[in-house]
Length: 145
Ligand code: HEC
Image (cartoon, rainbow, N blue to C red; front, side):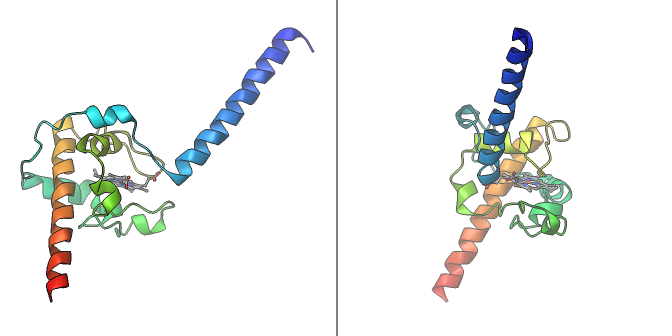
């Protein structure tokens, strides 16, 4: 075997190994890079605009459900299943990490880089926060009964 062929093969094998490691980590967790946490939400703390409800319904509800609980009709047939966006995992993420996820997508979660403007994606981040708030309030009232 000549040298360049051996070099080529070893590169090839390295790529296969790296790929398999990567697909293993991505199947048990989809982690946003640390840099995503530094993205500043230009509308942080505001209420989402009314139009965002419609934006969420047409773009996200088919998989994540109207209330973001991961129970949309299309989502039922996907593996992994779409996440419940009101769960603590999303709660603990920064706005920037959520924005990054919506922008980039992963596996069957589509990328919205070209379908939604930056401002629409930030509006949806606010909307997810409001769904989380609703869920928390409901849980509190149930607790009191
Ligand atoms: C075609 C179905 C589909 C659509 C449409 C969709 N998602 Fe997803 N979403 C998924 C799936 C599946 C995952 C899990 C992906 C994975 O782990 O690889 C996911 C994951 C996520 C996560 C990560 C949650 C976590 O716990 O880390 C967020 C946030 C999210 N979606 C938000 C949205 C928003 C906002 C929209 C609309 C703009 C949307 N998704 C549209 C299927 C979808």
